[in-house]
Image 1 (spheres, rainbow, N blue to C red):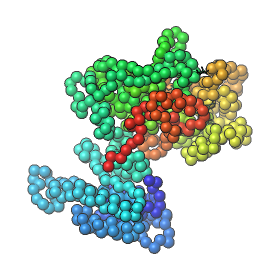
Image 2 (spheres, protein in one colour):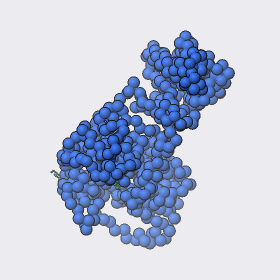
Image 3 (cartoon, protein in one colour):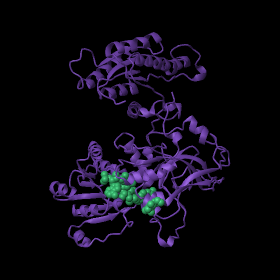
Image 4 (cartoon, rainbow, N blue to C red):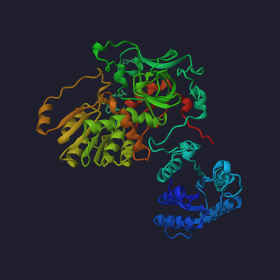
Length: 572
Ligand SMILES: NC(=O)c1ccc[n+]([C@@H]2O[C@H](COP(=O)([O-])OP(=O)(O)OC[C@H]3O[C@@H](n4cnc5c(N)ncnc54)[C@H](OP(=O)(O)O)[C@@H]3O)[C@@H](O)[C@H]2O)c1
Ligand SMILES: *[C@@H]1O[C@H](CO)[C@@H](O)[C@H](O)[C@H]1NC(C)=O
Ligand SMILES: CC(=O)N[C@H]1CO[C@H](CO)[C@@H](O)[C@@H]1O
């Protein structure tokens, strides 16, 4: 649900704490609020704060932007009145947050009364009233035939008795549940470190978890693991990925080695360079290239087994890999190549090669600061979408090139200052006219004529980062290395740098930079663009690779390897 002015919300326990923070955060977006609380003073105060925050969105209303209903949530009659008053004032109910909760200060063994300091009362408030509130909210929403959102506030204390989470994060967390409907029925646990924390569904647990507590021997022999699995191998060197590869059956040999991890893959990322890998370009001549070899650069999934010497990784943990062989149902990898991640999601796949390349290349090779001009080519592609946003977040002016109006629209929405759609405008003319002093940093991944054009558009002290040359990978005669006569003279005359960047050589920064990307993504500062076309199963990988090279994709192209995870279903 998009949170917008004119929606209405009912928040129990809205007088103070998280409840008040939620009422105010909703009011900041123009939402009408019914503040429900048993304390008159707190409730009235929140209500007047909400009215103030809400005023700028609404004028000339014949009803108030917020109302207060004094209510003890353990009294069903009170609660019914609160919902009735809400509907009578605002007409519909869009969001209901059952937030009222108490802790019981009396030690359990001394707690044998029936009063307001008894365990019974705690259960009434924290459990029964939440169930009643959910009922009443469903009734109110159904009566108006409106789609709505109900959030029942839990507590970190339910999982980890010591953790106390800040009010602000809690209100943010709830917004995540309102705006992202894929999360219907889910539970969101907000922690201070990695944003959203992943809980396997019961289905995933029964399918992939060996046991909750592992026995002393950590080699897990899950009887549910298959005897064999499918993967994609390169059998002939060719830059035509479809011709170069085939799907093969492989036996799953257990137990795995002491330092190894068995990863069950869910999503794999498609990389512009898959075609270079399939043509053998990643192997130097003396490395003794041996066919067939496994394809696919990156993926996420769940850890299905760990070797006996692996102490830092648990079965069932979502994890990512960025090593060859990710176009596969299962992968046996050294534990040092396994990166734990919050969720096995397409967004996480996008952050791997595409996100890490953008962040690391701009900072390391581009020496990005703020207040400069940054040009990104193939800007609506997998890595390009990250590059434009990161350059913008760092405080730079961003220019982006792309082919097509849909891509141009998306880039403009992401805050790009000047989008050049080369299908309707000439890049060279625009740059000459609008950026006569040149551009300070260029994130260049197209190559060929685009590289020449970019080099000529570079400012004094400018840095041109060579990210790739996608336009060259599948030429008629394959990839032909180019000569650049006069390049030294050009660079010398303007103190410029042309810097190569290859992510593989920055592996010591992967973990730390992945964390940085999560920190930007969780609060919504960084948007992750996933191409909307669905590729399901290993036999769709070749289609996905060809689609990426068709120039039609926007954002990261992803293959879903296990379709049982493709659609998230509600757990309510
Ligand atoms: N150095 C590294 O470590 C590293 C890591 C990751 C990626 N890369 C490089 O980054 C680039 C982008 O990779 P990606 O995986 O994120 O792919 P991508 O940008 O999603 O690739 C698709 C986009 O590239 C452009 N394109 C495709 N074919 C083209 C062609 N023949 N001529 C001109 N433009 C073409 C198109 O955009 P428009 O038509 O809109 O421009 C297309 O939508 C590639 O060059 C890749 O090799 C490098
Ligand atoms: C790929 O295979 C098809 C059909 O076998 C063939 O026509 C085509 O020339 C091949 N392409 C390349 C680049 O090898
Ligand atoms: C993980 C990985 O190897 N990703 C590769 C994707 O493709 C680019 C080049 O286009 C490589 O630089 C990345 O290393």
